[in-house]
Length: 335
Image (cartoon, rainbow, N blue to C red; front, side, top):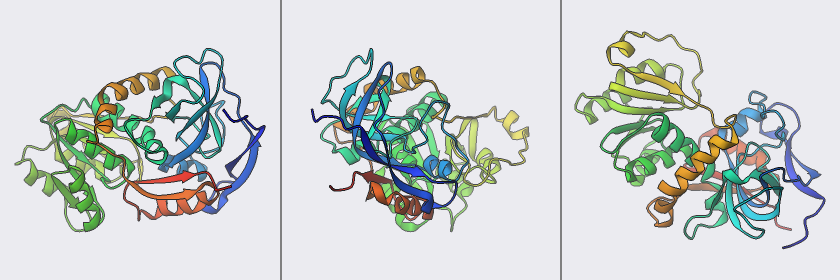
């Protein structure tokens, strides 16, 4: 292995604000702690929580670096104490609680996964945040089963493209919403049986038609706001609604009568604050249930654009414009 330098290039949040507050910086290379490995980062994913952190609304958990970035792929460059299961030189992708926008990041061994199939580093780095989120919320929390119907809001984003592929490959029917005809077409190519352009159609009416009036069994929602009452209307009896973000606001007035009459479950989660052991359980489930699908070519991350690390501000600007379909990625600057 190449000798580990004392310092590394990274991206800092200079102050809360717009994409322009992301600034290239130099920091000491982190030391891997108990049960951690040091990863030489070859690619990192850009996610909406990064943007929210940049705006000053999503502080990292206590003891976690303020460098943004929640998922990476790279090569293990060093081992912390009791870092079992991995060796220096192994290629991995990993979920991290922060620090991905850098040349090196420390990651718990439990949150590392082998790179499936013949994926490259950029594609591998696009997996952890979306796969951990979709699996834990759709398949564990909401218990989506084969033969059931899933409604995915925001089907053309990183989470959406993953949820469509994962659910359809596992035997569920998928209906999704997206903001343009082009995005709807991509969603259907990925496995959605019906894609609703929410700027032109009412998704509640589309669900009614798609399910012959029965409603959907599970909804994965990242919009919140006024979508919640409409989602409740679209759910089938015993349906499950999972919230993972609130692009339309986190506060809304809800009539709980249909929730009671239809025996609905309203739930939600955030991934970042959960303990390492819990994330390790999710990682093991992904390795057993999802990684074989990716290795076989039945699922693949959708990459929209890749930026050098020093242009992270441009990546955030694209993320917030919603022009993208799939994932936005960062790679180290060419030396």
